[in-house]
Image (cartoon, rainbow, N blue to C red; front, top):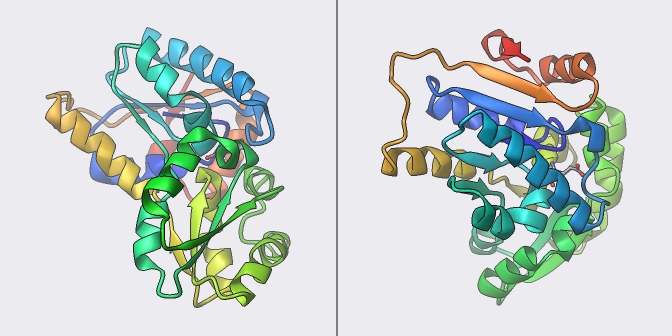
Length: 254
Ligand code: DGL
């Protein structure tokens, strides 16, 4: 699995609950964080370099646990590497069916909102729903610097989502894996807003692909977690801890 930082841990958490004995390598590309404002070719280049590194370790499946990287690189990665991929797609479909008001806000990075993948899902599943895109400026940075659950993150969410909620949106799609860690803040600010987070669905899809491909590891093996961090490793571990990663998953090597 990889992401620009801690965001993909939301997918990892769900995956480990579903498949606790699988071994996972999590690559956090913190030296290049944030991906959101970077041009797509740059994010694609990083995604290729990371997957190159992961396949060297003989991984059997790659989860692109980052919406921005999925938007920039997923089809090209699938073509270039002989492993199955699971990527993130903003949950427009579940949001459109869930919204009673027929009005949905999509919170994501500029890279995701500008991408073809997003345009396609809106086209496929967003008809009949009023969809407003909101670039989550600064939000991933707040999560990455350990400020989820603070007055600062709630203030930022108020500013970004407030106008659309007041205008009648009753559902928000978290289109960036970092935002999964802001769910409590969103709920505190907007108690009636329904939140669509696809982390668990993506983890479920990954497990399904492993099952279908006969790729599951032995059921008695230890579910180790190897961590690769391109930036400051200690800082990353500190934030991991703050995001309540249980001690077992902290046994990270490399
Ligand atoms: N977690 C990433 C995503 O899902 C992006 C955060 C960033 O800007 O690096 O889009």
